[in-house]
Amino acid sequence: MKVRIFPDKFQLAGAAASDAANAIRNAISDHGSARIIAATGASQFEFLRELAKAPAVNWKSVEMFHLDEYLGLPATHLASFRKYLLDRLIRPVGIIRYHLLDGEANPQNVIAEVSAEIRKSPIDVAFVGIGENGHLAFNDPPADFETEDAFIVVELDEACRRQQLGEGWFKTLEEVPRRAMSMTVRQILRAGEIFCVVPDARKARAVANGLQGEITPMVPASALRRHPRTTIYLDKDSSALLQPDVLAHV
Image (cartoon, rainbow, N blue to C red):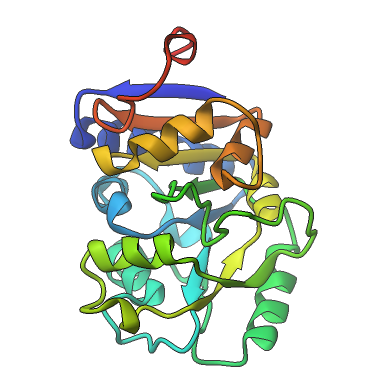
């Protein structure tokens, strides 16, 4: 695992997007296409904006999956991650091969279909974030570190739901769905390379818990330390609680 720290979230986003674009170009050069996993949420705004502007990426050779989606939420809702990715990545860059999790359909059917697609060949690069409660995708603590399934239905804890409310996706906590489909921890770790983008002070405690101490389902993001090609991108605020022994390896 590598940790990179930047003065602010804008420099973080630029560096992460440059590295991500290189990884996509390299995959296309190596085997003619790139299979990626895209993250969503307020913390990814700047990163995806910079990634969409990256030069010389043949997006028509990219196949995209995403991490999670609420159950029962229409794709027209502001908080829909399908809408998020269509608006911020798929349409702006012209991705034509993508697999979106339909939160309005039968979740077991959706999971079966998308799982079959993601298992057809290896994922080259995954873009992820870390939630305020340490979640990875929608795997809230205690996360399932053992399942071999690619996607599962999860119950969202209150801390996770309050984060969604705080980011402005919903007007009240009651509006935030209680269940979602999520890519599993093991499926994320199957990616050839992982880029974890985590700006802002509100993520500092989750970052510290994830990068220090025990690797545990109680801190789902700590699982990223098991992957040898994970890069964590932090800004001054999100890295504020890291101990000197972690900072020594930056």
